[in-house]
Length: 331
Length: 184
Image (cartoon, rainbow over all chains, first blue to last red; front, side):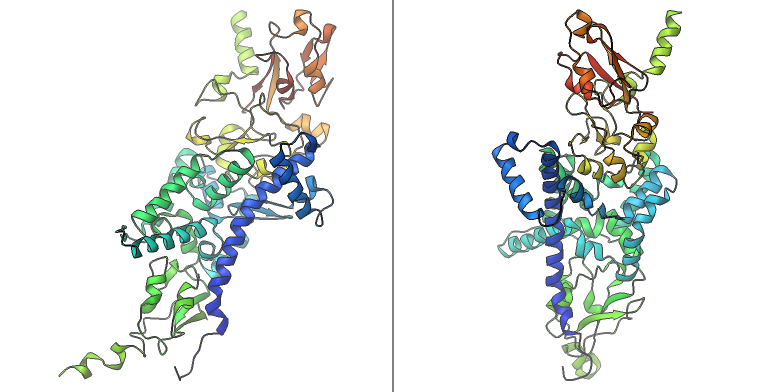
């Protein structure tokens, strides 16, 4: 690797940061219903009537939040919601799929709501499908599930590893929107894992029981485990499809430095979304998760700022195929 | 004349059957400020922020018990937990499925239309000569939405917004005062 270009040294550590962000998002989604429970206890002025475990929750939450707020019942309303639609002080953010689903269901434009999807839209236009890799609370669980599947394979279990057409999810997106329009109901909300996770965590923590969404999510986990690796995200997720389309001309993307690449194909194996980094095949589906950068042994993957992928550059210059091309090696 | 009267009563007080097509026995309210049912279902993205802002945890969410169309949508069952008219859910709703309504008497009377209470005089203790008045005491809009006469007999006025606190508090079983939902 004597020659020229090297990726910036921090890029290969972004994957750790990504795991940290995913854990923080999921922890927040667990914490918010607990905070809400605490708020309801405060609002009811009923500390003496609480059960012992409720008292414990009250005490812990009071200890955690007392330095931050004067009036828990009001001030803790600042952060509410989930990744599907959330409120941070006065800033509201909404998943673009929610906005599109509402447009389809109502066949109209309710601008105060649609504008809340603007920031996620802009971020997706620049960074691509990063919601899928960096924020989605389901991603953390799906990725752990994927790792679990690889342990099972390592232990000798013959789990399914089928591949379908990646374009299947665009059909799911279109179908979901058409059915939303036909029924007048935002149907995509009920089959979209991040929305399900946020809701179900609230149901189970604050309302005391899982809903139907948990069953759906468990089925998708089983599908991933037994049929296709990361199958739901790759082939079925309507939100993933929308983010892929929105991120088609993203500015920040991963590219291969052909002079550093030795064709080891670790990037293709690690890629959760079944892409082909080794042959410059990132496309619109790459979510900039940086797992390929982290695993690359020869520092051949880096970030670049350009609206399209680098054209296929052929075999890596450190690889066997490049050093001994067929016409030279042959007799 | 009787037929006309019955038709007028049916128009004024939608029957539970009209309110919940999926399950006629299910009598639920939408949170205050909710749009008419059809528009509500088209607007609501099932984010759950109304429930997460409800300081009384009054707002529950449907599974499939009211049909697939209203799965995961917010509702209240007044006998279990009623609305305290804090109006936080409307402020929290990002979609406009729940209108934001100011927490003041005029705005609440003008815009909240969750339903209307109806007294079953054959069940009501006060109408049986046993002075009760619990519903009147529970009402957040006493003398506006509900007035009491002799023996604390409750009379619901047409200003009632249908919060359900009277039904929640009724000491009779089955409850003598119920909210007839108004789903628009």
